[in-house]
Amino acid sequence: MIAVRDLRFAYGQGFALTVPWLDVAAGERVAVVGPSGSGKTTLLNLVSGISVPDTGMVSLGGTEIGALGDRDRRALRAASVGFVFQEFALVDYLSAEENVLYPYRIGRGLRLDRAARTRARALLSEFGLGAKTRRRPAQLSQGERQRVAIARALVTQPKVILADEATGNLDPANKAAALDLLFAQGAETDAALLCVTHDHELLPRFDRVIDFADLAGVA
Amino acid sequence: MNALYLALANLRFHWVRTLVLIVAAALVGTVPVLTRTLLAQGEAALTARAEATPLLLGTRGSRLDLVMAGAYFTDDLPEPATMAAADAVWESGLGIPVPLHTTFTAGEARIVGTTLDYFDLRGLEIAQGRPFALLGEAVLGAGAAARLGLGVGDTILSDPENLFDLDGAYPLEMGITGIFAPTGTPDDDAVFVDIKTAWVIEGIGHGHDDIVVAGEDAATAAARVVQFARITEDNIDSFHFHGDPAGYPVTAVMVAPYDDRAATILRGRYLDAEGPVQAVVPADVIDALVARLLRIASLVDAVTVVVGLAAALALGLALFLSWRLRAPEMRTAFALGAGRGTIARLALAEVGIVIAAALAIAAPIVILLIYNADIIAARLIALGT
Image (spheres, rainbow over the protein chains, first blue to last red):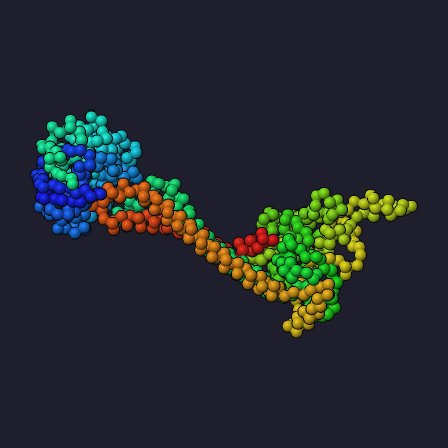
């Protein structure tokens, strides 16, 4: 589902990320670990098409991202990639349900229809937030906010889920619960999961763990 | 549609900030229009009144004070002239003189002592009751009647000039016999009385019981005199005036010349710079005043543009800063597939909603003002006095 070959991307003050090879299959759950500043988030940006590599190739579901224009990359990202951010990145003025539906409001090529609304409500119900769909992020606990963020990443039924320190702000109980939801829903759609994490306790639950220090180089 | 939905949701969530932005934008849009409209209407009202006042006679001095006091009943009174000026016009046979004595007020409305000719010359129509016929009767302008809550059959008391001035004018209680229909002119805010009634207020005329008894000298009797504070059927015959009527004071004499030739002759009679009386064509004085006002208006326009620009910049800055605060949301939107166009549509939708709401507030105010500009301008001119 995700294929990276001979990738090189210059960023920051003279830094360049190089990734010779990376494959993540559909339904596979891969954790990426590594020291801060090693380029893990940059890799997620490259895989999702937010950034385009200087050289090399990134392919998403067979589509080479570098060959697409900005508009098509955005459409591909909206339709095929689900994001879970470390700080949840929920929109403060929208309710939990509207936050889940946010990708449909702003994503290129996505249409907010009855099916999407039904899916959003079903996800929130499944995540134990059925009674809190109208609450705003400020009215939810940390764990609840993260569940809303995960529901938002899943609502478009993406082929790829990218999680950047998705459990970093949660207590141990909520970490496990968040990962359970992510895995269970990802499995339903056979989505590839690429999860950047610092939490070594969670690593045994992934199919594969990639140490960024071995995989990539920062020059 | 989605941009509109998100913009509305954001503006509703931050409703205090939104309200401030809308009110500020409404003010920025409304104030210049209001200023312009009122200025134009004020100018029209001033000019119309001046053009409806053919000629004014008064003591030589400020031409503007004479016009403002004689035509607009302002507080800045010129030195009084005398009835001799009106008599001279009668004797010339060149026009109808209408004396105006505007020194006093009642309920803060200007008391205009005049003759019935004034009503004909101004085309004033009685809406209720009848014009004054006797000493001590008053007819109110529509605005004064409404403001004071008075009607036909009520009474109105002239204001004391100075509470501590025991030698000053005595308040006179006057019966209201009529109310004029509104005209949108300074007449609406005036209290009209016969000019002799104004002289009674001034103390030139008075009424009292005949209290002199046989064998008593006049000075002793005068000490017991109690002047009447109201003129009634029972005491009206006791009212009398002292001195030469030609020397009684008037603020101005409005003159309606019989024709252009008579007007020219009349103006020519008062050209002597040493003479005590001057003749003024109000339209000339007001034209000069309006020309000056227009120059000031240009300055006001320039200031309005600068202030409007500053306010618009401040509003823009407020919107910009609020967008800076939303940078994380924009990053999220971008990551989820939004483009610059989506973000721009979102920003435009918010600005559009704020402007539309500001227009929705400003429009009724502006429309209301434009429909009532004549009344508001007349009130402002009266306030300015």
